[in-house]
Length: 319
Image (cartoon, rainbow, N blue to C red; front, side, top):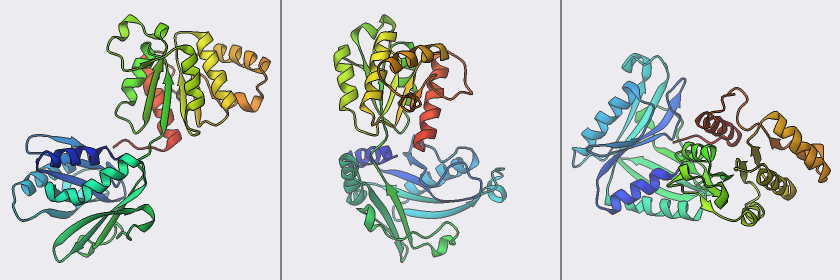
């Protein structure tokens, strides 16, 4: 994820000084993978590198770094079992660094790349006790020293970023729609939350769904990018069918999830066959929606189930 770039850029542009902790190497069993981050201010922090003793130690180190005027970075190696008593047993390498206005030299181009959706590399060089960051295109990234290299010998690190996230178009703003919207808010997806006026119930006060006519909802199906994920849970079976049919008809999509029972699926399949869809078309429909292991029908559980299914499908990792 790249949200940390926007947050860090905004902070230093306001004149704030903060620290960043990044997992730059992970071997064996570790709480988080390479790329996990925390942004640390004097009185607060955002993000996580896994919690527990490792995170507490990293926060202490970040605060010490913020208290220094000359030292701006530190590379550290943590054997989780022997040093911190964590039963994970792996090794984690952390990069701690100070972020301030001097960091705009790389935060600005990184933020610009995020806005344009272009893949890019964030490269780091260590030389003569100093550290430098610079952004390049994805195909011009520098080689990165592997996690097995001793800290004292690390000279180069490189991270690849692809700012474009999977797009989820979800239809419906009832209980389930609201629960799914809440579940996906912190996850690495671009979400278009759409509903008809009839679908917007009184208890959905404060909803952020875009309210459109049913004709316009169907037009949004046609206008979505080819790799879009679709999730349908409106107030109306007729509208559900209309949207399901529109997604199957367009053909180009990554996922089509429809809320409902196996009975609802059977009835929809019968109608869809009458409308000319084949068995191979119907095989692309996920109904019931979500992972099959979670059978609870509570909106919050459905939302967790759908989130787990799409995270598994897309291979995305929350920050």
